[in-house]
Image 1: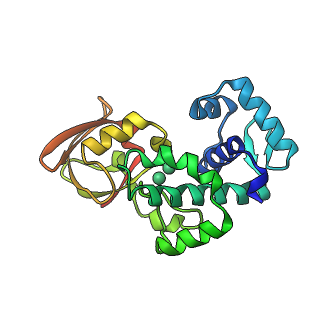
Image 2: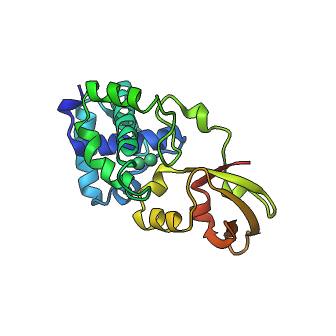
Image 3: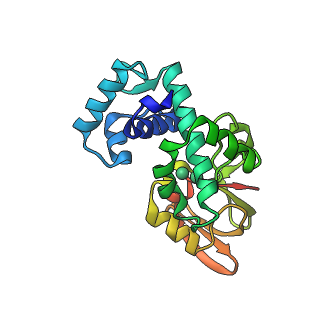
Length: 218
Ligand SMILES: [Zn+2]
Ligand SMILES: [Zn+2]
């Protein structure tokens, strides 16, 4: 079924799926920014997707997935995450998201089933984001911005939108801020919009916009 859908459309479906899951409506402008294309290009693609019954547009010109669009989006997200697990055996953590984009579109039903089995039915991707249908696995984790100085926590999840920023992933990897790492909050400065962490005795300061995308287990 996904064979008829282009890789471009699958990328749009993935973005729309994430924003709907998180309860955020997404504008054409924001989609353009996230996908790195122009606003007219996004408008054209959304028109095609509406015609093909994958989305509907609301009164504010925001796209919403139809049940068919949602089902296809879940499939592409799941395949993306399985491709990340496959690639992490060979590549560094900060690189697998980008590389998985090339693989996710060519995974068949048969390979997907085999990968799920081979990888022991993972509930989250290597960045800690939930496979569709496994949102409960991440629901107890809170963003770094909700912590106070002195809290000791374990990093669990780097949100999908942060996965889209290669420099950020490289930075986090260098600073050892990735799932499973224990950290201590040393300072939270709301007026400065920063959180400082002690990671293996190195101090790392993050802005709130990044800290909001990093979820931890308290
Ligand atoms: Zn990814
Ligand atoms: Zn991931």
